[in-house]
Length: 278
Length: 294
Ligand SMILES: Nc1nc2c(ncn2[C@@H]2O[C@H](COP(=O)(O)OP(=O)(O)OP(=O)(O)O)[C@@H](O)[C@H]2O)c(=O)[nH]1
Ligand SMILES: Nc1nc2c(ncn2[C@@H]2O[C@H](COP(=O)(O)OP(=O)(O)OP(=O)(O)O)[C@@H](O)[C@H]2O)c(=O)[nH]1
Ligand SMILES: [K+]
Ligand SMILES: [Mg+2]
Ligand SMILES: [Mg+2]
Image 1 (cartoon, protein in one colour):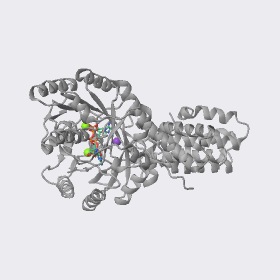
Image 2: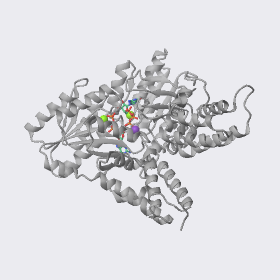
Image 3: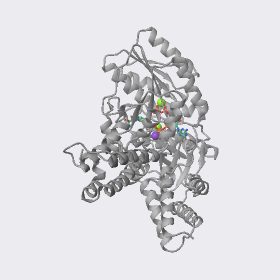
């Protein structure tokens, strides 16, 4: 049985380990104060207790965030409209191609919509994904209004029997007011059934800022964390589930079309749970 | 100087109120560690820096006429700037012509955009600049660079039908050098520290074109992994300088400090937006200010 002092220093150690895996500082602090509370309630007397309580806290974070089966969402809405959003370069366009393949493999007839009319090469990027996957893409003109590209795509889709639309948006900083307004307009026009925030697994403390700003601006229904192949034990999924209370639905694990995994909470929690060997 | 420590205002006030110098230093060091880590400075690095600051604060004497506490704050600032190579301007002038630059970095860090920004920068400086599209991996990488090249009036060498990045890179460099171009910038595919085959490709490009400068392009929002990743890149092909992108967002850029520590390379430019002109020569004091909450 440990003294309170010893437990406190163990909690500090745990907090640092979480921070070292890019759990946002703010989130790591809140988790450690919940651990302290558990100590005060007499629930923790040993290293093992501490680890067990921490594990429960982490699992509870994800349970509170709930879970979503994207395929069920797609089945329930015809045509199902999905909008992908996020800051620059996180992997939105690549993820769209992956989800389109997933939907196609599950019997859907998806249409990818290139509503990024801003970034150089964005249209061609999705066109090449279309050539390689055989999944059609609806393109727009560079410089044109992304909301109107999306609107036209919806008309097109309903007349051609597509049952899922995956709408790509240009990467944008969450603090860029003009671009955030542009995104709001896309969402207003499209009325998506599901808005997916895409976040890079290697992001530091900014991950929760991105999540907060996008959620405030247009609302986020679910999160996909990309580039997890570069950082399996990274804390971004935990930070975002904690801050948003929204589920992480998939993890991107590479650049290929099949490199997408359903997010497994238990596997993940075991992976990021710090070892208390010292 | 006052402004630089915006996020640490409380800690500074506490520091000046405190009666005992040593206690005050210890308290402040704790807050500083927290601020650095919140800004994504690598944990070990944050401990190392603060340890050094503490050592100086407790063993050295302030200059005559300067209060001990004022002096302490200047140590903090100085040590952080020192980590970034001092407050002098980085040398951005090519040491000779032709000057071959190769950009490397993680997926989506901003290499292609930065290649165009850099090309535009050197073009405005009066150099004859060419771009080489040696990313054969990302769909439409060539189209992206070609369109950017058109925007800024800089020729782009590329051939989407060739699948070998090494071949394109060496052909592109040869093409521009023979035509008397003075700065040649090679864009490469994104890769990460665990993709050994892609790292090998990077090594091969480098040994075939023998660049004068390899620049690591790093996303300003990267977290604790910045150190490991920069180190791995540096071990694969020696990094000569660093460009930090996307500092127009809310990220503090502490990961860039880690990259500097891991490679010993200076930061030369920062990216502050998507447009080619959203690009600045780097000033160490600016990033330090940002990390500390300027
Ligand atoms: N290793 C790895 N790379 C990925 C993953 N997802 C995307 N990428 C790569 O990340 C880079 C950026 O991906 P994009 O899909 O273009 O990102 P984006 O968010 O659409 O970018 P913008 O539209 O410019 O904002 C590309 O090189 C992708 O191949 C992933 O899960 N793992
Ligand atoms: N806001 C902002 N966006 C930037 C900046 N630099 C690049 N970007 C954006 O980041 C995204 C990725 O940039 P790219 O230049 O395609 O990145 P990359 O490293 O070449 O990507 P890969 O080739 O896929 O590895 C694009 O949306 C760019 O417009 C910057 O300084 N600020
Ligand atoms: K990124
Ligand atoms: Mg995109
Ligand atoms: Mg690129």
